[in-house]
Image (cartoon, rainbow over all chains, first blue to last red; front, side, top):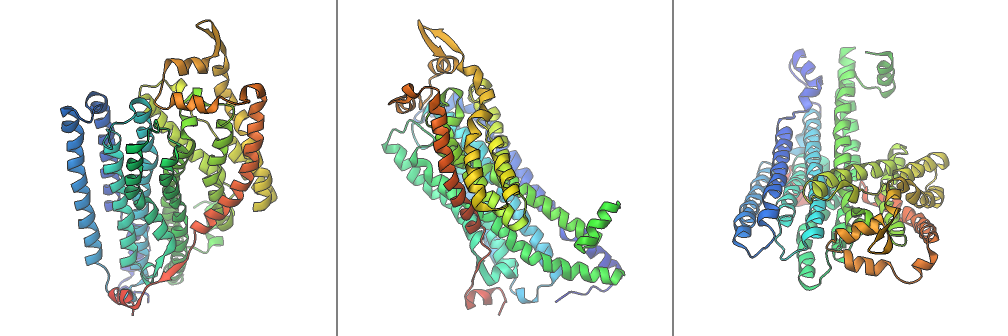
Length: 260
Length: 261
């Protein structure tokens, strides 16, 4: 049901894009991620060749294992805090949600997805090929290398934060995504999330077989198949469009009639 | 407001505020599509045919020409299906190839060059842009997925080697190395051994490859074209299947928790 505002000024406010699109939290998330990824890359530049060549050395422990010991608990804590917050503060009366608030939430949901894709780029392309650089030059000794300690134990948890967070946001705040589970959204979240446990298979294989780090080795194809799930995100966008179009017509159709 | 803008608004039936809001959302979708597929296509290519693409001296006549187009057509074909079916935009394949080459070049600069200290001339990536543009152009002309796969898929692979020839030609120059003839690419391989090099070279340079000589490139290309036809058919459908808009209804208890009953 359309929420009717008390005054004309308020109505005018509600027709402005700024009423629906609040960039603050989104911009903060992007800035934090950009700074974090830049810091990781600079850290690699400074300490990878100098202290990251031998996993048994004290220098490796100091510079690279300390990083893992800091980043992993921090990400797990961030998951628990964010996802719990989203669930606890869920909308418990979605049936009464007005179109203005619903449209506003669709924009917030879009921000979750864009932040997720921002992380996906750095994981799927930037740091993943960085891992290729490392292995083609140094091979590997253990599962902990300067490239893995950034890619596996920091970057992958980052996109899991946003993918699961976006899923919970949609499920707890948008009626269409709450009445039913979006198959495309499940695929888009689950595929990349499963890359983390697939690391177990990958590292298990590398522990037994000398693949000489051929990147196209079948051992790596689990990542490839799970990465294909990115193709499901257009399905989520289409589901959003199907609900946003009627919302636009309801809100701005009414506004046009009033202004006429 | 320009007359063009007024005309667009009249056709869409949106108020200027609504049109602006809609356009903001579309820009976010553009950003998401670009970032998502830069990551996803690069990951796919890197882990399926990455070794051939990473170094200039690994671009052989038998497998590089065969497997690279076959791998690189997959996600562009899926994108082509989604963009064409839902939006009638014949841009999916070109978009995929463009995002891939942008992502790869960033990595070649920041990873291979600045971190691994490999010279640029050693790690130039292959491009599929020409084949992808032809694929989209064929779709635009024939407006049919089956014909696009049949003709476009083959052309996609056919254009791979010629469109990369300009960047590779200097490395075929013959040089004398320890009394024997080698190419510049071979010399690079001797000078910069990499983790996967020995096994890789043993795998590719055997059998009758040398008796086929230069024609082996076109034999591989034709085979790649044959495979790309079917890859395109399969991946067009995979793209459509993944972009399903289906919801599985939640149970009563779940709906109650959200106040939907």
